Length: 75
Image (cartoon, rainbow, N blue to C red; front, side, top):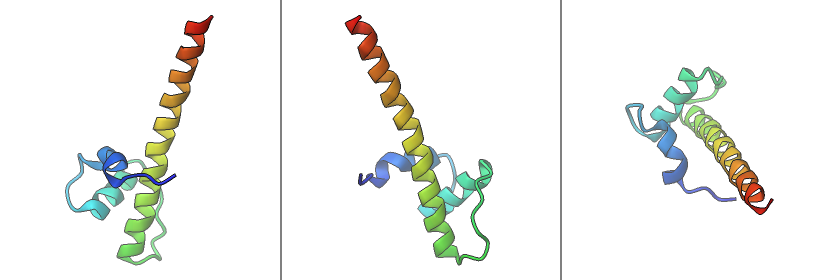
């Protein structure tokens, strides 16, 4: 699934800087390791990927709860 940047970037909006800097700061705050051997751009890409995974996990849980609520209404 393609995810629009404006959707997952909402979880990093409280951090200063550009998109990559915010993603890196988010990962540091949540102790998500980013390989130090990567260059700055690669670290930003890795951090973006981690942020997308965290965002997707939250939305998967939301969809699961909504589905369960819909099933409860049917009973």
